[in-house]
Amino acid sequence: EVQLVESGGGVVQAGGSLRLSCVVSGLHVDTYAIGWFRQAPGKEHEGVSVISIPDGDTYIAESVKGRFTISSDNAKKMVYLFMKDLKPEDTAVYYCGAGSGGSPGTVDDYDYWGQGTQVTVSS
Image 1 (tube, helix red, strand yellow):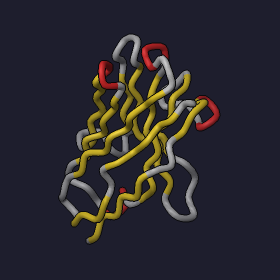
Image 2 (spheres, rainbow, N blue to C red):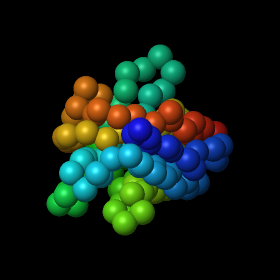
Image 3 (tube, rainbow, N blue to C red):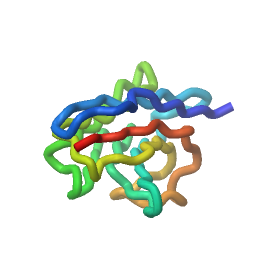
Image 4 (cartoon, rainbow, N blue to C red):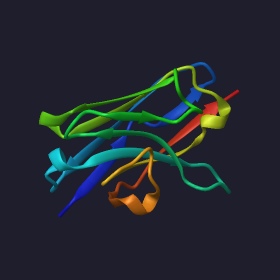
């Protein structure tokens, strides 16, 4: 069974930092891209960052460039999203997905999803 499990969300003040983690099991992650998407209340999913596990290529959305960094530990099947200088508009549920990826692609480009982790940034 394929599982993606996110963790690391929480409540943080504006300007603070969080590191989200996504652990993947039941999947040969070496052939996938892992993407972080977020969804704020009443809004569409937004692709935040993607890492291609085979070649290490990354994508960062303009809205978070310079503040968010994606990385992976392939041996542990972990993908991280380090977020700094958080803003209230970063408040959303953050999901990680595994699929063919893109820059960032759409939710349809990802075959498997985690349950999400809530990030709340207070002003």
